[in-house]
Length: 195
Image (cartoon, rainbow, N blue to C red):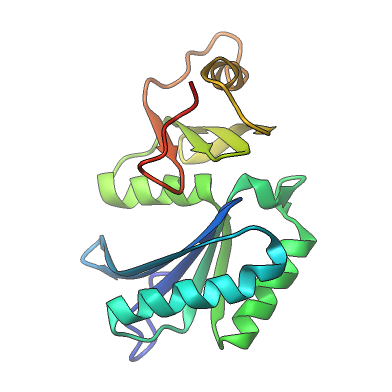
């Protein structure tokens, strides 16, 4: 159970690896609420610099949180998945990172699954939603129904609104409507969505 704390354990690290950025968040889970204590982020050009960039992001989050962590949850963009599972390359890098920093991995989850869990905790609902990960050269769309990722579509390269609409339409199953709610995640809030 991720939320069962060890004696003395007060905080957790979430390390999210996106196609072009690493996000580190130190958080606590108290009274069924998630409280973010510290954040850090670094750009990511290639997997070969992931450990260094993650270290800088983790240090920044740790400075803000003023706490140490030993448990980590890895959140991964669909960019790092092969046949529905994290690729061997990314798993190797993340396991080395965990060993180098004496972190105990609790889970390796897709960003869509993490959003699903977050919505269940924060809103106390069973999410029925379309989740879109919009990045500079990669777009992922997922259909979440009854706490499950039912279907996913990905597109490498720059995506237009028209192409994004096609990706969303590709999630639709015959005889069923798509959810009205859409959740978009991307590394920079100030980035605009495709035109």
